Length: 264
Length: 293
Image (cartoon, rainbow over all chains, first blue to last red; front, top):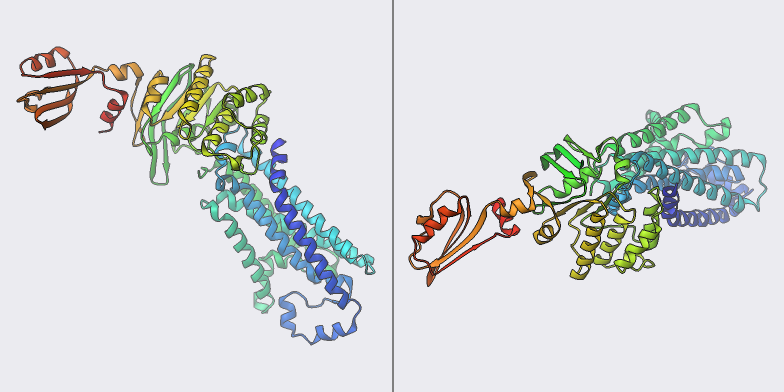
């Protein structure tokens, strides 16, 4: 158990930095929202925008003048940033031991690699949940001046689950990359690149109907806000796909990392 | 009982050779030297034993347990000091030592402070502020605080000043007297000579010699130096003579190793007109160089 606490301590600084970034961004965006809130002119501006552009940034069908409409648009950026945090956390929490050459210390301690991964995974999960709570909490606090109805909290709940799943998904991708990549030094960069490519795919997916299939490929299309609002739930196919990726990533980590040579 | 036993232990990194068919056994209570130049496979052998890397073929047992199956159990009784120590930079020494102690199922506090006092280690400092030698001291305390039954040292003295080296070897000898087995890899022969009971010499990934340090040194090798006029190396083309060097600096000088019946070489020398004869025990260093030729 003391490994878990040690890892938490090691991750604390980055968690604090990310929390501060999120809080600052959320409050900045919300102060922007005060100009849109219940402002009919905003609706005219939005409807005059080209549809393709709105689609590309998943802003189609969102009503920026309501609290729900507003956070339904920022949700995607929460997923993106949360995913970035998680993928870096996942790849870093394993590969840092090799990068900092502390593997020769930690992995010669009387503990199996499986247990070590388990504690590291627990620490990473805890950090992710804490960051998620910071995001949700500060969103609520920042939006308090506005009239928050049940629709808002319903969507916030769905967004929380979606963001949690997205983070978990990228966390497991990060862990998996760190456990299979020989060039552990690049696992962070590769993980980030994968995330950026997936985000890019989510943008171009909206450009043509032929690229519809991409919505099963990029996690940033799994939990589109417009669907969350219209159906009031997460789509089953996305749920299944993301849970499968999470499971595969974590299983792969437990399978490969204990069996591979450490790069010292 | 053998504390370490490797059988045909082989490790390839892709196509690059690490070690090949290394078979050796280390007996309980001995100080076993493992000598070889850089890149010979010393660290590869040790890292395989410690479970950091996995053998390509062959097997190894520590305390009679398989290194692949019982890694954590084995490591609970092993103290390992790598050639270069790296720790979490932001941590204080005491945090790291307490973290280490947390992995063992016994209370290590007393021994930890004893060792830290002995090595004059400041526990309050951050690891990133420590010099190379001081990090090494942390490594020593960290590796020994749980009073391990097997101490594995990989080129342990680099970075320690002579005074600290002496203290370090005193500690190791003390642990050995208390019953700990020591597996000691080095390329510095003098320290191996001073400390070890048996040695294995490793070259190009394979063990080329495994012996008592005494037999290795005696092994009937004599280092012979002759000086005189008209000495001819051709007169010494006798079986058992190796590494002949001939220098001519005013007078002839012949240096060579001889292994075999000492009377044979004495007879040959008596036929020559010599001014000076020197028959010495070769140092381990010289034997070592001999094996490496």
